[in-house]
Image 1: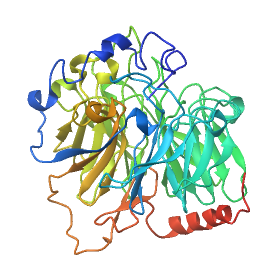
Image 2: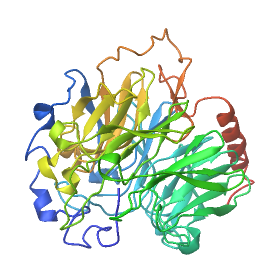
Image 3: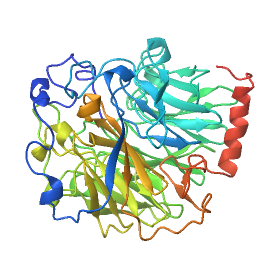
Image 4: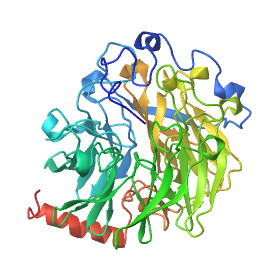
Length: 492
């Protein structure tokens, strides 16, 4: 997801966030014009299963436009919104005003609360995507605000107490405008900034949670830079993707970084079109030799058109051989959706699950709101489970999915008009019952799923499990690092 200065703040341009004139957007519902994918599709569409809106964001929430996905920890879902309100009346608008928020909600939809409202620019503003649990705290980033206007790295308690800015991004060589929360490897958090650095194309940074030392460990070059996602740990390497945002000649790259000696390598350069280009999220490791990811494809600003055959792909990358394979190519004519902008979920049933956020935000053909889909790791058996509808389930589903108690959880950035004035939703998809999931006779299952953050993200079976952090060495490192902060000996 991309924003440049000319369309970043609502009202600064005559166009909305993605180029459609605001007056035109107010009169259109994404399934009110053009084809409905679920009825016109050549791709199989599931007939079972139901989307339930757990929460439709409204202006009274002081939280709007949840670009990031939710995470599950200790019986709660946590997430962020990029803005505070939509800034308009009772119509959906692709934009917003205000500093954004961290929120919490139970998986049954009860208990919605604001954990942290970003009302002061010194705290940072616009936490776009993602949180990381560290002990009893949530760690995240804001894209804007802070002492230098280039964003912050922050920590806040699960109960909303103890908010601390750990680092103010300085811009320039220090990095600027991070989009995704960093990941923990050893005693340090590693993350990406979209801009800043020597080539103004972003940096890889580290922040030691024991010593409070921030460092830029890699500057992206002008080609193969501008990363939007986060990093995924596979052994001694951290893998990520660079978007090459707004380039018409370069299409992004997969890279890896080794913290032990600072080695940086580009392992794949995207070729664009049906080979994939412009990735805007993160990679997911299957626990073996494969990483899975998506590319968004080129997207237009005002007056531009989308190149043909460029609606995005799902790919597999072998970390042992560097073999890259496209396993699914999206096309609106097939009815499978368009513009996949999320990390994949590798589920215990052996399938991959994901979301495509659709063409509605581009003003594209069909005004399609996005899809929830499933496929086999080799790309076969692709099936659409749900086509989003702005009024009923929200539109423009975002980022990663969470699997909990046989249900999938996610967010839409917009829609939910009936109760949320188009400010976005938190949703749950229940069923159809997966035929290949192992049965569990109660309690926590004995297996876990590897997610896009490069660690065990959740256990299958029960909400009684601590399904976000898993167990083992990763947790021990988190506990040690978190204890230092909680003891008060490491306040930045």
